[in-house]
Amino acid sequence: MDTTVISISRAMAAGGDDVARAVAEKMGFRFIDDEIIEVAAEKAGVSPSTIASVENTPSLIDRILKHLGNNPIEAGHGAYVPVVLNASESYEDLIAQVIRETAQAGKAVILAHGASIALRDTPGVLRALVTGSPEVRAERYGRDSGLKEPDARKEIDKSDRARREFLQRLYNVQHELPSHYDLVVNTDRISADSAAALIATAARN
Image (tube, rainbow, N blue to C red; front, side, top):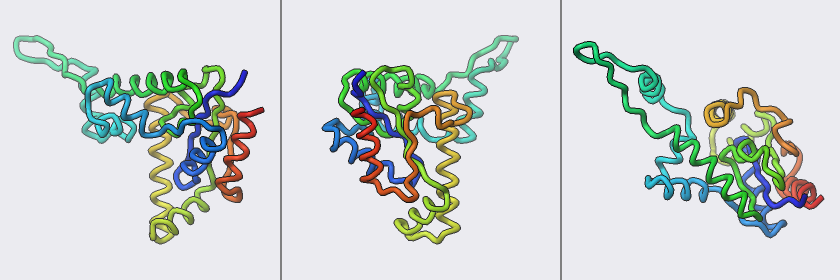
């Protein structure tokens, strides 16, 4: 079956954004990133920032409230009153729904948002991961941000941890594996354009 959608996941400072844009250009596909959040926000009738916050690690307060929402609390006279949950869980489902709808339209390169996991059983989808070693990514990030190496490495570790938690929370992926993807590209020594060429070639073949 022809590839009609390419989903690209990426680790921080691996160059995934540049790779995805280059793949879209090479394939003549639409580049999709923020549109996922914008469409989901429109469907939910909330601001894009509200939907975007769902993809971030919930705060301790959010986790406590979610726990309380799953457990009734006792009110007066022995009555039990459920705590009203926020809508984060329905927003998570909505993000996955918008990803699937975007894929159905075809001819798109979807960057991030866990699209590779959401589309794992969808025909015509090539799923790629753009990654690299923490050391090289930290060096890259430090160079671009002006941070010293120890601080840059902390940011990389923080991002990697948040990404793991995101995949666990939205898609129940306990351990990300190479087998979650059709192609894994390490950009430690491969340029963004070369990585994009590899992905585009795989998509065409």
